[in-house]
Picture: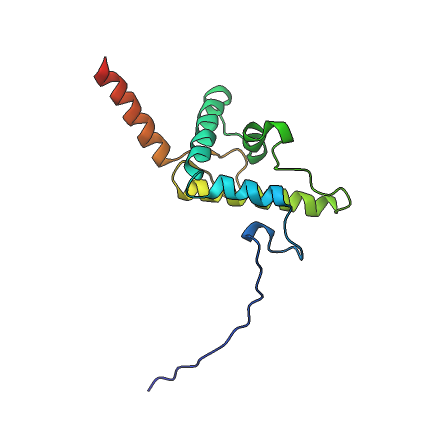
Length: 147
């Protein structure tokens, strides 16, 4: 004989994105727009490809991967690797957490798409992903065939 229990769990409705959920107010608009730009179905592949190209070039020159910070400083050079400055009256630890969470969740999306890879908890482990390598090989073979 088996019994089934029906359990109702009340979950707080957080209208903002996963990288901002620990905050009790919405993220700045520039951050929301940037996250959408980096991860939406329409534009994520372009940004992920740009990230993978930078990672490949960086690894070729440095023999190790870039940090998340270096990657985003390359992608957002005008603003120092972040969509906009966070309020200076915030605790430095809160600002650092928001920046790290933003970058981590963008990179997770690009990893899901196969353009990049990395090892969790390992600094400088960013590398190109399977999809980037496949596209690169296809372009190389295509250029050889046209010669």
